[in-house]
Image 1: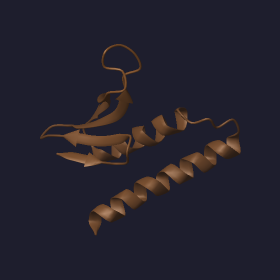
Image 2 (image 1 turned 60 degrees about the vertical axis):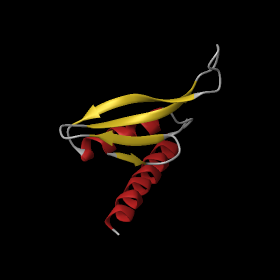
Image 3 (image 1 turned 135 degrees about the horizontal axis):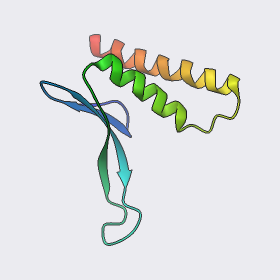
Image 4 (image 1 turned 180 degrees about the horizontal axis):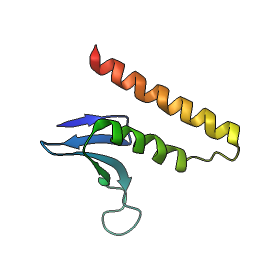
Length: 89
């Protein structure tokens, strides 16, 4: 299984777990500019994966106020909800 969440994140998984992956780019050396996927976490349930995904995205944001933090969480929850709704359609 491989499901794209957006251009930077995807879910891969098998029979026993889900893995959240983030796209990265090699910054130096012979492979500079090449893209690759890094494993961000391993999860037993999709609920746990999406909770982590929201938390990860909030922690990586440039938010500097509580109001901005709350807005970011709401936007990410909406994003996840829309992804799940699309999957149900």
